[in-house]
Image (cartoon, rainbow, N blue to C red; front, side, top):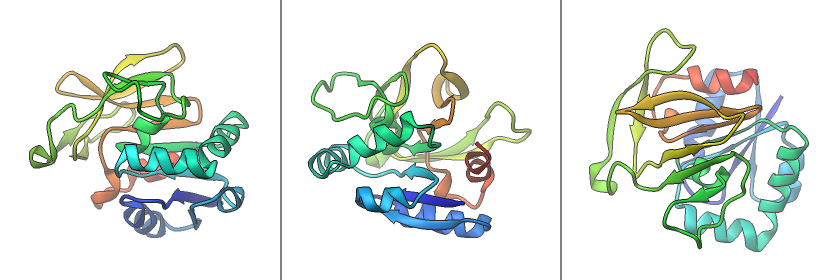
Amino acid sequence: MTVGVVAIQGDFEKHIEALHSVGGVDVVEVRSREDLAKADRLIIPGGESTTVGLLMARFGLGDALQQRAAEGMPMWGTCMGMILMCENVENRSDQYTLGLLDIDVRRNAFGAQVHSFEDAVPLHGLDEPVCGVFIRAPVVTRLGEGVAELGRYEGQVVAVRQGNLLGTSFHPELTDDRRLHRYFLSL
């Protein structure tokens, strides 16, 4: 299995480290359609959604991601990645999105960078909570049909799944807990 990690900007290196620690997979950094063609599944990491969205649109990577998702490729967006995968961003009609997850999100729902924090997040299907690292994290404000809520933090939806698509508001790659990476690899 080859996992692609979008490597335009953001914390893609942390996801690559996490995948190597899980083992049993090859990893490719995805910056182009050609890179994407080498992957069986894809992680869109945290970063700056406005910048990455503009670059995806400019270089046609967004169209290729939409096509691969329609073909059934498993994809996981963390923080910025979930923002890019959503349908709509509240109060940001100019925000580039891929429209892969039938959800709406609100950016920076827990505050600015200075308000970043870590806390336990209970997730459906896991006996123990995961450590959620929230950095300018979004929350899900609307769940479409076919979207399963996987977890909440302080009453806000912070983890979802729609078929082979996964979205988390927080950054599991910044912890030593690899359960979500293993879960994604099982999709």
